[in-house]
Length: 187
Image 1 (cartoon, rainbow, N blue to C red):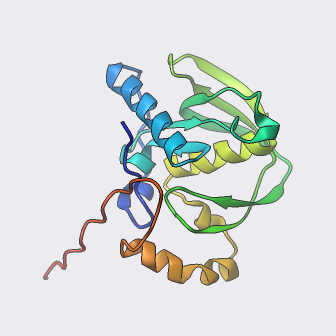
Image 2 (cartoon, rainbow, N blue to C red):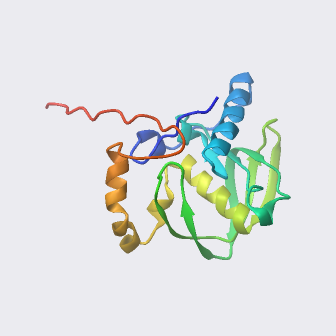
Image 3 (cartoon, rainbow, N blue to C red):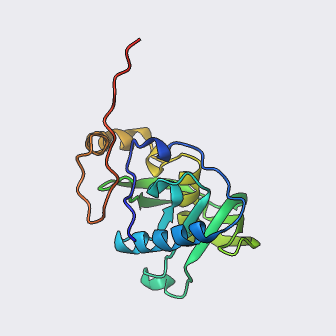
């Protein structure tokens, strides 16, 4: 099943996701649906908050990029970046912020402690594109979007597009979650 993707200004995207305590059939189903959704969009990474689940879970598959064709799809649960090194700038985009791209500076190499889809522990080093995608998706688990890491002057240039997304005026090739109307609360 293809899941609708939550977009900019949805509260689930600014919350800190909760750790998983294990993998059961409902999580296995969510993982499968996240891969289907990511491929349909098309994307190379997707975090559970992007599909409305505030869980520390993400999927990544960069093999659709020709120079990374040998990389295997990956499920990452409860990730924790142990160390970082290097630094580079690259343009990023996000399925939750459609139509927006911008340069983001990130470490070029990370050491990551995480659990896989069988809930087995791993500590591995990642570099270049894989390190970037993992950091981008881990940011989602911490309630941060790539636009939060952009330079202020670049962020101002995209503000009109962000306002349109916030108002639900967005066109995508994939389903997006409807924006709940803002209800005024009287004091």
